[in-house]
Amino acid sequence: MTRYTLYLLVFAAATFWMAVAQDGTVLKPVSISGETQTFEIPSWGHDAPALLMDVPVGFALTRRQGPDFDVYFLEQPGDPAHRRMGIYVGHTPNPMASKSATVEPGMVGPRKIGWHVWSEEDQGKTLYFREAIVPAFFKGLAKGTPDSRKPAATDSGPQGPLYGNLSIHVWAQGTDADQVKTMAGWAKSIRKSGR
Image 1 (spheres, one colour):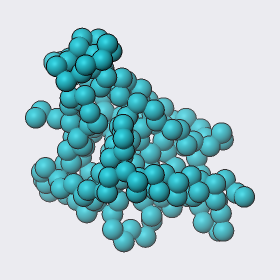
Image 2 (image 1 turned 135 degrees about the vertical axis):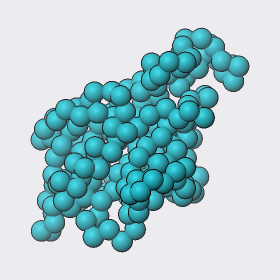
Image 3 (image 1 turned 45 degrees about the vertical axis):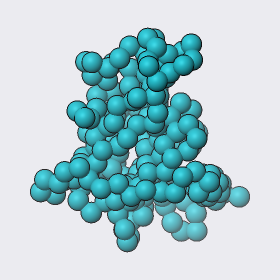
Image 4 (image 1 turned 60 degrees about the vertical axis):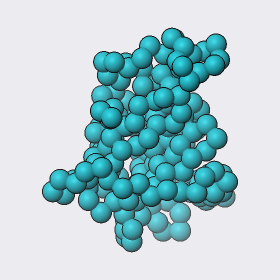
């Protein structure tokens, strides 16, 4: 079994899990300006602030809700390059990067990160991947973000608000390495929503 086949099996299992999760909801952009549309990404639970992300017009964003996480898929219907971007918001991201991945500097929102970059070949097709995990993404995201150690009215547990510890896991894939790099660059636009 090739690594690509294994990746497809893991992706199929994740897709099955997401089918068990709430059905996918297609989100509408909150604004469109020229060739750019802005999506609001509701963050998972515990009063976490929503996020905004700018992407080119023509891409659709779908939300899948799990029991303690959300996953968003950004795709362009009918895209021959099979480009897809995923954004996980939750407490336990699951890294997918190959052991042979290289690391390139980049940004997810205001945070400096390392993109894990690799490619996999199977049956004459090459898929390119980029992946980054940003632990505790919401801590200090912007002024006015509540201190994650203080209890919130919606939390009854001793930990207080849990959203300060939420991670963002972003990945991009496709058959064109430059397009995948461009997609990963869109993650730099992720920011706290003003709503």
